[in-house]
Amino acid sequence: MSKEDKIHEWIESQNSERKQRHLEKLQKELGIQTEIPQPKLRKRFFTRKLVAICSSAAVAIVITLSLVLYFTVFHPNPTPTDKSRYCTQEDYTVSKTTMTLKEYGEQEEKNLLYFDWYDSADEIIDSLYALKDTNEEIAFKEFIVNGLTGNIIYLSVTDNYTEIEEFQEYKNNCTFEYKIQNTTIFWFYRNNDGQMYWEYEGYKYYLTIMGPSTSDEAFALVAELFE
Image (cartoon, rainbow, N blue to C red; front, side):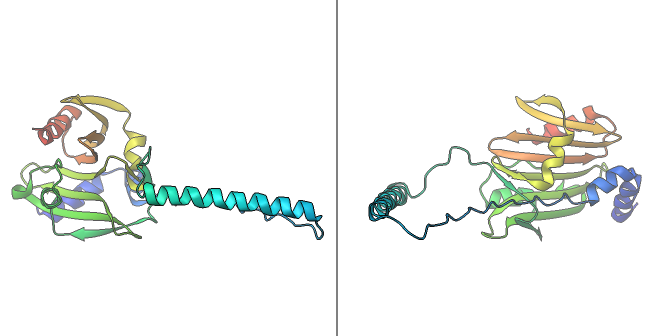
């Protein structure tokens, strides 16, 4: 069976609800902007009131400038208490790359987990996610068809403070927990089709795995990542 036939056979085996869920893109988040109403000025002011208002405004300006100078000069890069960020599909682009996940980790000097199926792979497709405004790389996704076992995986990785809209499905579906070397794996598995996500050494991983007939077989494959 050719690799195209394997992929086609798997796609056709999925129920319509599953296919629909994978094909449909999540709706874009609505941004709500509240307009600040401008104060209406009276036509006439008593001199004393005008002086008092001007004085208050001057004090406010001085305080504001002082704060700006303090944080820009003395603290140019303040460390945020919460670095988490949520990226919608409007915020990033996805492009194909010739690098594998293993090669990407080595190039970026990141200790990333990956399935070492490259020598036996029938198909490998790798993608990079980058922010539109800064071109910062925020995620890497690898698709592999193992030619020896027929297993198929999508493995995506981000840093531990970036949330990406596309991957929220994993958190919605994976309600069970499993431990591998003190790492909590959140998982869902049904009809040879499983989803898992976890955090490990500063990175978040999102895995779709197809092929193993039981969840135990799927966990055995995931355990190989930690060896």
